[in-house]
Amino acid sequence: LSQQVLDAPDPGQRGPYEVLTLYYGSGTDKNRPEYRDSVSITTEPVNASKLVDLGASAEERNDYWGFTPREMPLNARVWYPDGEGPFPLVLVVHGNHNMRDFSDPGYDYLGELLASRGYILASVDENFINGGIRNENDGRGWFLLKHVELFRDFNEASGNPFRGKVDVDNVVLIGHSRGGEAVANAAAFNRLSHYPDDATLRFDFDFGIKGIISIAPVDGQYLPSGRKVIVEDVSYLTFHGSHDGDVTSFHGLRIYDRLRFTDPDTFRFKSAVYVYRANHGQWNTVWNSFDNGPRSPRTLDLRGLIAPEDQRRFAEIYVSAFLDIVLKGDRRYLPIFRDHRVIGEWLPRTMYITQFETNAFEPLATFEEDIDVT
Image (tube, rainbow, N blue to C red; front, side):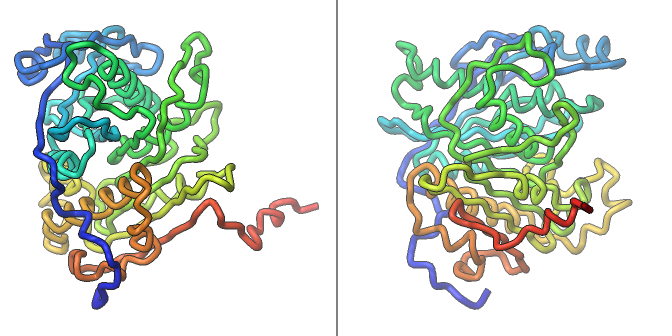
């Protein structure tokens, strides 16, 4: 980290725009006053029953939330620039956590930064499928696409605060933990006409998703037809901490390895960064250092972690630089994803390992032929 050779402004610094905020949602939420009393845009519920199975806890959960999977809400908090637009759209979604310890406020630091730099960022509420549910990451991804669909409608609706302000052809999805797998599922679903596990559920998405970011993701919890999801023709960033006390191996590399570029003429790239002493939760201001829940200090040695503000500083730099390349075409930041040392003065003082590939990459050998014993 002794070098600083990149000749470009620090992408982790605030931009020129004043930041505005609002909530949209059901307007009837039992547990979230911001989605009951403070919504600027009221949204209609969606039927997620084909994708979300509450199992044995259905009665308890339906009683707590006040709705079933047949009428789940589309709630989000939004940070957006005070300007004419249109602005690129970025959605961020949390992963699994105690459903009563609401996770969606935890990306406020990204919302403030990115809105000031000319992006609309919505932090999506999926707390109602958190907790004891399993194998619901297809539902998490589908919800993201339903929120992109909302913004398409907002952009066209007379009197809507986002009328004419949303560039729905320039979209990036960000997910953390299970949300990190969900964004890959969403990118795959975006190209499909039907839900792979139930063809009675039709998809009509085909949005302009240009990239996805997986923060400390899981992988393989959703297996359509027993296969892992393969993502094609989007740029990809993933990062993971060496001291992750929840997802203990770098699952984002699995998504990275499966991601394919089929169009040699359209520039795309993928990058993976391993961050020494980063944990799972400090990417989210609500989760923080408690990777194993409230008793984490009893089971995890937290003294080795980098400071939470340093961990989030890394996320600010890399997420912002990724968006500037993918959504604004500013390739000055591309060297960051090849080699972290080009921005040594900006980065928190720890160690990093970086992996990088573009759509022009062609392997000389993959050794896959060794599987065929004949």
